Image (cartoon, rainbow, N blue to C red; front, side):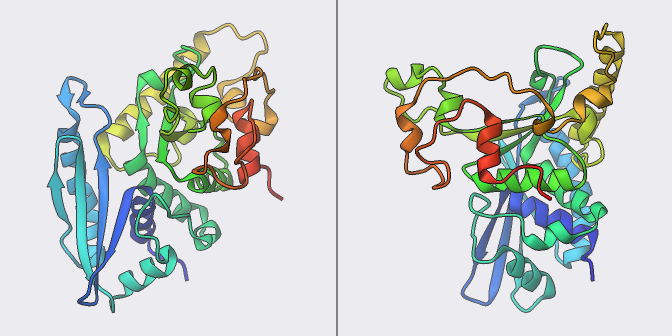
Length: 304
């Protein structure tokens, strides 16, 4: 039996930006962070938009979990939390799927999610996107107004990046680029290393998806959804105004996976931190000139 859409959305939020605290009184606390990436949106504080959307999220989740979600707002984030008895079905199901991982920095997308029908996969990704993704005009590729993108930002968790990319592939949404938090990409000319900042590259991974391609998932957070729709429309408008020598449509140009595109990467110098112990075993000690090669080594690819 498939889970409820609300469960999938909540699961996505927890894997994207959640913490799980097991308590001594046979209860578990679930905490979700909603970051305010941009402080000003259309002249207003981003936290105002988030507060309005939190009411929508609570309206959806409070009746489902049978609890009133507690909301605590700070300057750069809003925190949602609730405590659930360990005997309750929602606690049992969440812990079964998330195992003993206490933080989003270590969680993976459970194998069960890959078996869900597409409409539930989208609900899961919507929950994850609400807490990890950002949509801004500054995210455009190549400085072109027809190339607006969504960024899903994942700190530390290399394999969650690949899980997300593969789940997106299952609902036929291609990733345009992954900016890996790897020394070959975040300090490709060794300038920061030579200045003594050898860990400059340790930031968040960024999964980049064209705005028009991300529309089937979208957001519950209202200002993100509105901006997504605006920038997806802008992609279409400015694409139509361009003189394309290859006569490709926007869909043809943007709906392409990395193995369907040419690799025009240039050679990068070896970086001393390619052997850093924080890198996953499968890529530690390897040199990468292309984000695609790294993604393939970690498991994002054509599949069957």
